[in-house]
Length: 346
Image 1 (tube, rainbow, N blue to C red):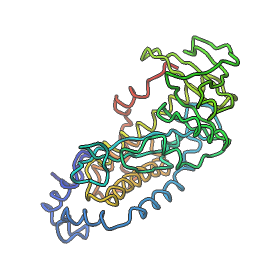
Image 2 (image 1 turned 180 degrees about the vertical axis):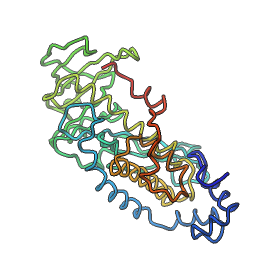
Image 3 (image 1 turned 180 degrees about the horizontal axis):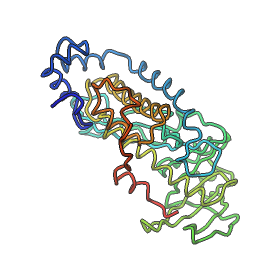
């Protein structure tokens, strides 16, 4: 294996082994001996994870403005749109005892808020796996006039009322046991997949008390999956079809989780403490934001996935970054990405 031919699937161990068999390249990089696994582990254990979290926030500050007018955002809204969700990363209980999830299982949760324009993580909260998703809403400071798109796991009417009181908007999938009274029903174009657009009041004893004002209830039929989605929102100023399109954008956070897990290797941890795990996750986020930054700064037309692929096979190359992407055919993302986004026939 020669330098410049490393694939994204190869682990840090593979790279270290490769370095040991190419001493000239090792000395050229300033590494005078093989890096031991224990060295990486000790670094993750002892260096405060907040160093990397602060660096990620700095990267976000310089990257996010580059995506404000991103042409890939297909909904005509001036509002900022966020998707909020979590992913669970399984761990070995005997090694990660601090992250107990179930009786014989450990896990952590990555609660993430994604800015849909650019698919950038603007908030990450790491908890033990047993923490319920809805509790992470308490950690957010809601932005006025912004939309927050969530799945039905985040249905908590007292917390939704807090979003409404902050002058923000939400789009969330309703649970099947929703109790309500229809106050007004508006006409919809059923050819678009819409089935109803209503103004409602909640009638459940607790829900009516927690959320005493009007809600908007939109029903949409997904022709592809042959499923009917019922969506709740506190926004009455946009079209009903835009609510369905906003919910479609929630899948961007799922793609972020898949991308990070598959291509930034946070499923194998170097260190077993809480600090080591958080360090590695934040380093992965920093890498993601760096790739997003150079994509816009250098006006690279390739996807984030393709950029990471090209960088991974040129890890020891002296070629300037912008030169790496010349004369390389721009290909589409893998099929699983296209299929995952194709949940509506809009």
